[in-house]
Length: 276
Image (cartoon, rainbow, N blue to C red):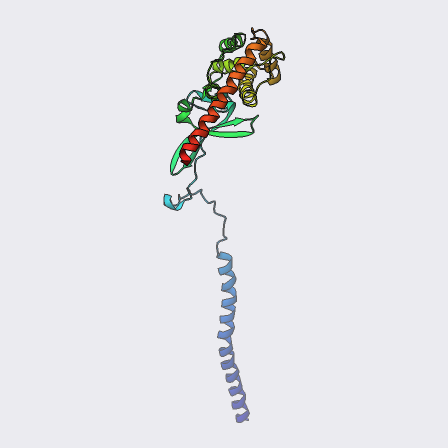
């Protein structure tokens, strides 16, 4: 009996000891489990913070050399030396033309300003340096009063010099290329032949047509008419001029042929002298 009592006491003591061992663990777990929710509950909630606008920071300026260079558009020139674009002008060697543009070009390393002139009838475009318009004799269209004077010249009597045809032809050609409208009218007057007069020689016909073309073009542009109408007006003025008789024309033509023959003989003699 005492042994049983001792064993029962020992078991009771062991169960208490075990309970004491288990109790701390349970309490620890319980404390952790109880504390954790409190910690989570006490954590402050994240509230949205209104951000104030921050001034933009300017980036550092890049060096100018690195930036691509943009060329400025060229200025369009519209007037130089008293002439402007789309204006009709007279170029002595070619007659009436129209200035299409004034442009800059680099020629042989030098920059030049050029008038771009179009001669529509000849289907030709010419570029003339603006600094040389005076040297080449380029001019504006004749005034109506000067055109009237040229038309009056056509009604005058033809003046034919008693010289060799070769010399007269040179004088006529110089007048045609002078750009002077009155001088050109004189060539038309002197080389004109009516139906009752002897026909012109081939060289005379060429010079007459060249002078008539220059004169009619300028008259047409000044009077704002067609070239055909200008030619009719010129021919009507020529019809009013006192013409020489057929006999006188024949004498002048015979004299011209004789002069041409003498010129040919002189040339043959010169060739013979060179051969000798």
